[in-house]
Length: 117
Ligand SMILES: [Cu+2]
View 1 (cartoon, rainbow, N blue to C red):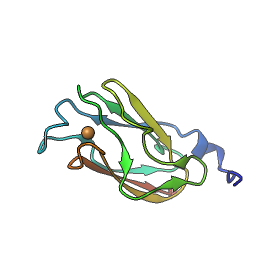
View 2: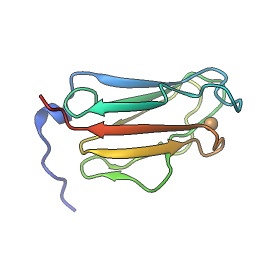
View 3: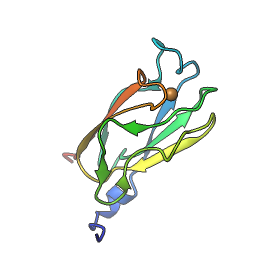
């Protein structure tokens, strides 16, 4: 399928949004994805980067299969080792609940919204 054409400001947003997998995230009850529930704005912060700062491997896995018309399938390809990052460019409004495959108590959510400006 051909990629949809996407506005330049959405392809090259002003900022990236960083979500840290914090040290100790592997332990149930600890904070894990920080911040945990985030709204990002198309054209501003729709490029999201997960950074694994824990000393354990983790994943970013959608709760339900999720794809973006431009960027394709969402989710880290396999595990993210300590120090690894995973980035994804969201180009459409969507809600993305996700979790860590080996540690299902680790959960987060991204809400991608249209800018009203
Ligand atoms: Cu994990």
